[in-house]
Length: 211
Image (tube, rainbow, N blue to C red; front, side, top):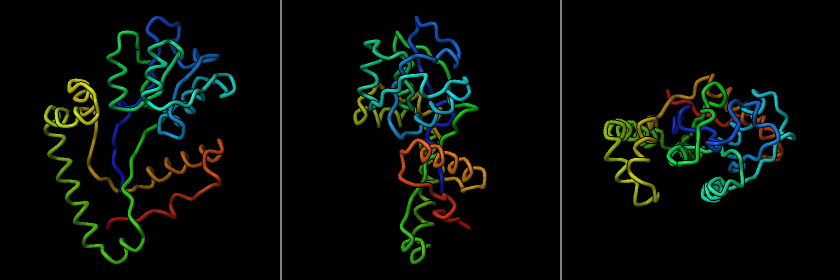
């Protein structure tokens, strides 16, 4: 099963507000901060391709969100690719401007994982868990303000920032469609080409379909 943790509006690339970067092709020659191997790393690859830029024509700095934010605020980097709720926090920075979301570039999914033995031997328990996830999704999505207030102390972000993220986030469990599987295969192939994973993988071989 998959879920849509950020949606296309919940991950994106922010740039310095006073920069001359106004379109993806303007990223040529710039410094971009991103978490290595993350969903936004894939977004950066696709954004560069859309801007007809070779990865060798930019400087990519692999930084965790906290370090990337610090580098962005110091103007040590020109752009920062990040996901929610950190994207919502970045958009609230006085020196930040959103260059692009993932729309049309890199739709993102999260996945629920289970061992093959558990799937085979306890399908009743597995379906019960997924049923509870669906119920939780309905409750959380109906109360973004309360959810943001609950998460704020643990994430160290302002509730108003988290509420922005929650209002564009989806929690529900989704079936693994052919389209979702093909997109995940493209991510796997991209990361294999970048040598981020040791060898090519076939995503469909690791999928369980909830009938």
